[in-house]
Structure formats: structure tokens, C-alpha cells
Amino acid sequence: MDEINSVSVMEGDSVTLYTDVTEIYTADLILWMFGPESTRIAQINRLVNKISYYDVLNGRFTDRLKLDKQTGSLTITNVTTEHAGLYGFLQIIGGQEVSPKKYSIIVSAHLPLPVISSNFSQCSSSSSSYCSLVCSVVNVSHVTLSWYKGSSLLSSISVSDLSISLSLPLEVEYQDKNTYSCVLNNTISNQTQHLDINKLCHTCSGLLAGLIALVCFYVLAVPAVLCVTFYCYHQSRSKQSGHQSQPAGDEHIRLTNGVVTENAGDANHPNNAGGETPNQEGHSQNNSFVEKDEMKSVSAMVGQTVTLHTDVTEIQENELVRWKFADSKVHKLAEFFVIAKWHKTNQEEYLHNEDKFKDRLLLDHNTGSLAITNITAKHYGHYKLHITSEGQEISKTFNLVAHVPKKRESTILRRETCP
Image (cartoon, rainbow, N blue to C red; front, top):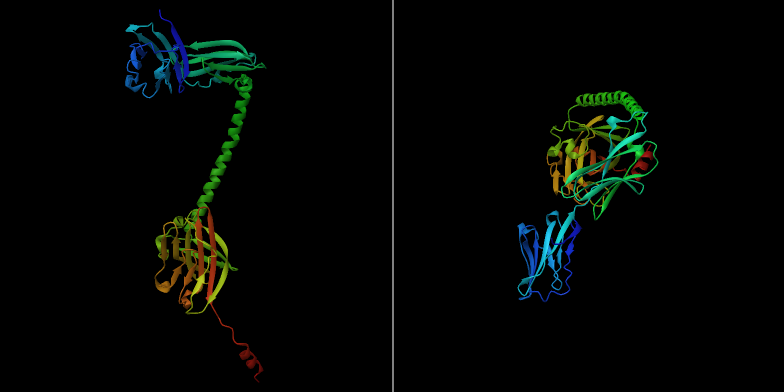
């Protein structure tokens, strides 16, 4: 029987089958064959000085073979389990075959980490001093699974060709202070899992104590969760009741000691210019929000142009600029509505072009500042600015009032000296 040389290789690596021939110049033909059918996969023809690789077995060896033209050795790259099997090397010299050499390639997959477990459902009674464990792996071949106590081998089990699951039991004392490990290895590599006795080995009394603690936790936790759920439900109902009692309208402004408090109302109100809902503006929470800022007073005379400055150097991408107006003649509750918008990313501009603001609004696309031209008494009131982006908001309020010119001092003095 011909001698077969065994070669082991890890999946994904390269392997070389050496011919142990120094020179092949005397040979007419060098052949490499694979499998039980001796399928030709590579060839060196010395008569025409040509190296050939054959696309056979559904391309199993395509772009993976390399022949050494001096020794005839064959290298297989990026090996898979499909390349495991029997290989033959044959020389033909002067028309006569030289005794072939045969090789058996064993391809090993990357080894999984063994799993150590114990059976809690069959815990040991307090009178027993041993803990039953098992080390297991799945879908392995050409491996050995072993238990070690320190560096001493306790037991092992091996598998050859078939890809199967392996398990190896072990019993240890609960108070054992030695180190135990489960090792999976083949001829190329190994994987080691160390045993934690305190974690995996419990007596029934220990499990009972843990079970009692778990029951106590649930007894206390469940009522707490119910209380929190009831509280959140009650708060939600209270908020819904508050929203339903809110008067219809777009947005309203309340004036208290110079502080502006704004509330969102009905998004369907006709003054909600541009068709926005609070959710689209990115400010709402349960259809309402409250924000506060200090009011800045700006004065201008009828017929003039006034610019409300944002104090922003440049509007950034994804920022939305909105200007709103509320009539200051309403003392306690004034209705806000949108008069101008600019979204830089979409290059979308909206200007209110009806009634008092028709053809009077100019919006600076760089800074977001708003100019009102040819002011009339109808334009005096509250102007609110919102600049919003992801996670950030700038809010300002302006009170535009009529400018009253000061009387000349000479006139005042003259009136004071008259008899």
C-alpha cells in the first residue's frame, strides 16, 4: 500500500504539498490529481515548458493553485473544507510512470469556545458534596475535548471525520479550590474555557434562598409599578382635560410683568399661516408648549421702515426661522399668528401677504432679521422670533411701539415763563 502523508491546515490559510524533488527537469510530465477519481487539477509539461491549471469540480480550485516549476510542489491558497481529501503527485519520465506520492489534507475550521454548564433543576442536596457539570461543543470534527485539573488531564473525548456535537461530564466538590478548565483542540489550535465553581455550583439550600429573595423582590416591585402606572395615567388624563378647556385659536400670548408666556392652541385656526401644526414647528408636546423670554421694546413712527434684528451672524443649515405677530391692543390675551418663515435647507420662504402686512415684509435670508416697511398704526404690537434646529432654539420677543418725538427745550422753557 502506498504511503499517505497527512497534512493539517486551518480553514482560510494556505498549504503546500512538497514533492521532496530537487529537480524535475528529467521528467517529461508532472501531474497533480485530487479525489477518489484522480481528477487532474494541475500539470507541468516539460516538453513544451508549459504550466496548466484545470477548471474542474465546479471551479473548486480556480485561482487557488500555484506550482513550483523547479520542484513541482503544489500550493493551495485560501483553503476551505471542500479542499480536504486525497492528493496524488505523479511523474512521467521517458514515457514511464514513477511511483506516485499521496497526500491527505485535513482542513480544520476555527474552533468554537467550549461551554460549561450545570443542571439547576437537579441541584444537589445539602448533604451532597459534589457538583455535576458538563462541557460541550457543537458542529466540530477532527477535535479532542478534554477536562484538566490544573495541568493534569482528567478525561477526554475525540471525533474524527463527522461533524457532530461533543459533551464531557465532570463532578467536583463544592469547596474544591483547584483550577479546572475544559479544552477543545485539534492539531493546529485550541480553545480553553475555565470553570468558575462559585458561579455554576449551588446547593439546593442556596438556590432556595435565592428563590425566596426573588419572590420578595417581585412582591415589592409589582405594587410599585402599578402605582407609577396609575400616577402617569392620572397625569395624562389631567393634561388632556386642560388642553380641551383651552380656547380655540392659533397661539396666544399672555403678558405678565413684561414677561411673555406663549401657548399653542388649535393648529387648524385660519391665522395659522403656512398650514403648520405645532408638531411640524418642532415645539409642541401634547399639542402645547410654554416658553418664556424677556420683551425688547422697539419704537418707530408711522411711514418708517423698522428692522427687527435676530443678532445672528448667519443662519445655519437645517435651521427654521419663524416670525409671529400679536396685536398689543389686546391687554391680557393676544393671538399670535405666523407672518414670515425661512427654511435654509429647503430654500423655502413664506411671507404673510394679506391685510396689514401685504407687500410690507422683507426677510433677510442670511441673518433671519425681519424688516417692516411703511409702518402704520396697525403694525404696532408684539413680534416673536423662533430660530430652531435639532436640539437648539433661539427665542426673542419685540414690542413695536409708536415713536413720540421729544418737544424742543426752548418751547418748554417759554411756556414755563409765561404769566
